[in-house]
Image (cartoon, rainbow, N blue to C red; front, side, top):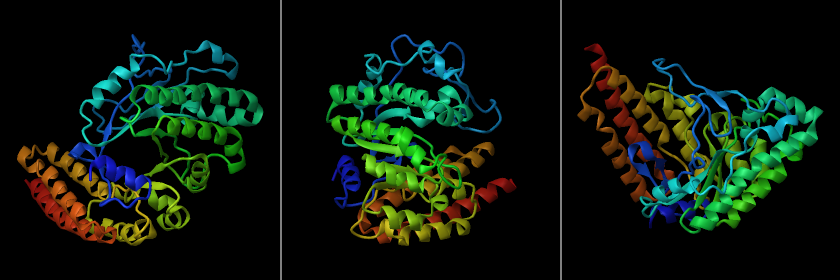
Length: 372
């Protein structure tokens, strides 16, 4: 069974022979990315400006902090000025030169493309979060006009991908972070008023182009998932299962949408001792999300690989031998071998326990380097 078929079957609840895995950094990935580039001739007018004119603030060089930053410069000063800012053209041929090149190395994998920050995020990147939320109350008609203009780009990209690459690109990925730690940014009636129809039309365009619709969203988005399902979303990427309540998500949504998740980067990424991460592994592998007959796409070992990457960073500072760092890939490949062969999802915990043993050794070696 090819990687494409494994991912497709997981999304469509057709019992793949194993769980799909995504972790390209270590060469363990059933998916392949095909990007969408900038318009012909576009160049940032100054550092950290994107094609929409949003200015990004990133961590200072040398700070040791690595992330994408956040937009702090918003090109839309007023909803009265929407005609005065540039709007990217999704039909520009130059955008898809990148896509064509990326497809050359796709092999038999499930290919993902997309438009990145897609709808709500792009709206507040353009206008500012406080301003957008206030004007939903004070100027709802113009906020809806802004939503329409923003949606023209991802819908247009989906249509172009379908026209140019139908059958070669299988999923359309996007991002819209919708939650605080407690709840959605909006009440559900307001969410439906401003966003539900837009998402439905976007997902319809993706399906019409022959692709699955994938959404990443951080925060407590338990209620929003139900709305996305009604709009036609196929896969939702959830990086905070502890915050969401993995038992609740499994109870409410198993069999209704494909859940792409991990053990929790917010709560687990900083854990340094295997004992601290063992309990979430047990919860995940025994919960109904992994129960037989309801196969869901899941990054079952991503949290462990994150720990490997964390240790790699510590060891690099100590100038550890590169061959020691090179153990990462074969160890994860070894773990993937078990995932490939075991097939029955409840046995995932066995593989994770094996990785814990590897981590114990890794931690011991790390401590020895630190003592030098």
